[in-house]
Length: 323
Image (cartoon, rainbow, N blue to C red; front, side, top):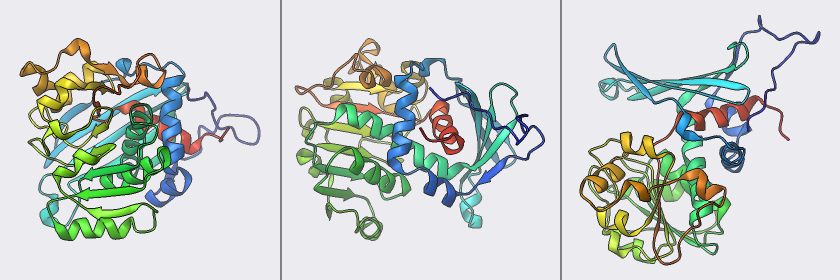
């Protein structure tokens, strides 16, 4: 569980008058490498935190778009990510989504740190996926197939290379130029790197879906029993990356059942179509604690949408002393 450490000044008094420290994207990446981010997320679950109690993501209209508010309290820390979504920004050369994170101590709700929010998201999402994959992927998993060519695709490769000794990484994307750019960015990682197609899932030990797809990316019947599939891209209730056949024959793990039924199209649509039963959904903390084991006789799917407690776990780790 995140600690209750509250910074003091030299006289032992809380620094209520001290301004919050600002952490840039580069500082976040330097202080929290992928393996530490994974451990910070995992430690919260192992300490007994139940994601079902996390507040829902709040969306509210604002200006030329809307704001997403993601608050959470875990241990001695409270935090909120404020993300702005402005659909017209790309036409002006600006990001569609921008974010800032405010970290406060839970006792006084005094702001202690401000973080560049997009960098935090880019770090914590692969960390959550890596926690799931570490519990769900075969011990000897060596071949990773990644759908997507954005920062999350790259981040997932780095995060998964820590939890398994990968010998081959196959990248699948719609743009050959973007695929080549990803391969070049990963060139120093170590495994064999190749461009591939949807059919490569038939030979994969782990599959990662990091896209904004509205329809399934591949034929789920190709996925081998015992393999691990992580889908974290599409997170609207009418969009999905995985087909109902795969969802129906797999062990399906979600961050939290209630959250998945509100936000995860892969889950919502499979349930509506009768391929998946709600009672068969497994919370992530159950596989992390060992209450539920991965399956060798079926695929193991993790569907994530991102939750507030995950941002807080990593943000607090940025300022807490390392054990």
